[in-house]
Length: 173
Image (tube, rainbow, N blue to C red; front, side, top):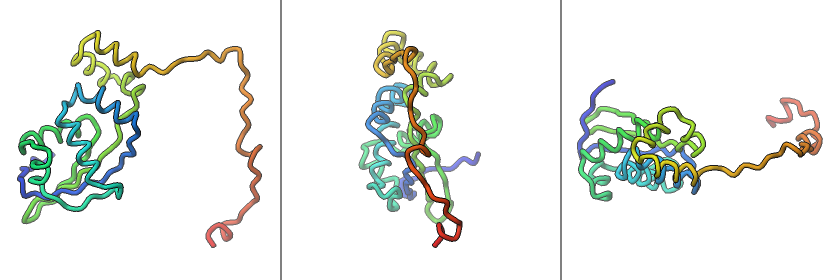
């Protein structure tokens, strides 16, 4: 992997490939933050707001990021690396007169996936200790109801919706 220097004048654009639900935001704040830190989570949310629901932001400078977030360039770089390492961000670079970055944001895993992940699970436990880990686990635990005495009577799509046979020509016209 190529080492690239980051400068305040370097440009960036954000591509938002996440569709964050309120549950995703809780997972980021409660499960990811103890691992990657508050600056990385703040960077994630800030980059997401840059897209203004258009999924691609306009081009801005890293100086804009530093000023808006009140952090240093080193803080930004460290936070970016943490987001990349945990799978929330992919970074692309184009060399020119001024460096140009594209940041792709990805959704966090669900709480259930997080707790069953062989690495995230252990790192969270090591970062917050047993009591807090158990509290977080209980917070996100899904209620369970036994369906052992029930019969599944769900109908299929075909039994509810009747479709006619379309030809390729009809569909494309």
